[in-house]
Length: 180
Image (cartoon, rainbow, N blue to C red; front, side, top):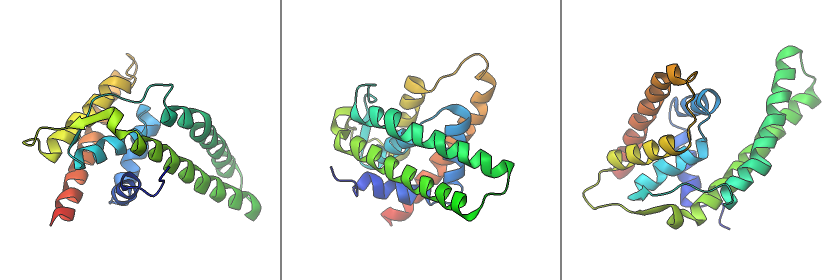
């Protein structure tokens, strides 16, 4: 498995754009959106690919996220809460930083699974499809398919959609800059 692939490099580049990390994390923490699947949808659009299905619960990427990424994130969140409640000594702070690095490494593996199976989840888009249109189509496909929206969360839909719009704008700006 190639972990230093085009999807990983795209994810690093997009995540580094101003405000993108904060917006993606808000979508993750407030709206149960999977950041890696969002990044996957954006990357597919840049590759002129239309998302046609999402990984099933039995696919490697999802199993990896459920078995490795999510539990590690829970541990890190717990430790972060401990840090907020009381000053941490250097060893505990170092442990938190190592967990953060390990979580990033596990997310890189998840993206490698998505990259390796990208042909299973997408098809070549019509030539006239613009990158913005494809990105919007891919993200909407993901949101409709996976994002949970209970009656309680309905009020949050406008917030989620504004975050998605801001990400789409930053994505299009980044793509336009790389094409020049």
